[in-house]
Amino acid sequence: MTKKIAVLVRDRQEEALRMALGLTLADDAIDVFVLGGKLEETDANTQNLELFGDMGVGVYSDCRENGDMEFLSSDEIANRLIQYDHVLPY
Image (cartoon, rainbow, N blue to C red; front, side):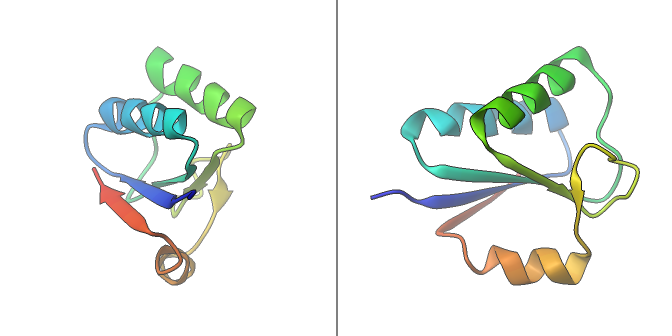
């Protein structure tokens, strides 16, 4: 049975994105939420975001500066999170 998993990214961004990418191996539905600010522009983060796009992982942010991600307000994110089987804050 496919699980819906949300990964909340705040601190240790590279590690959080790497963990979310690893979760895709279990064939679960993964979405990533970058919260509280702009995602650091590192090679690892850029590469992980490209892979998310290739794999159909939804990437959302509450920060408009993250232009490659779909912007959602904090209230919209909160309403979405109740739909997930697991929410992993990182």
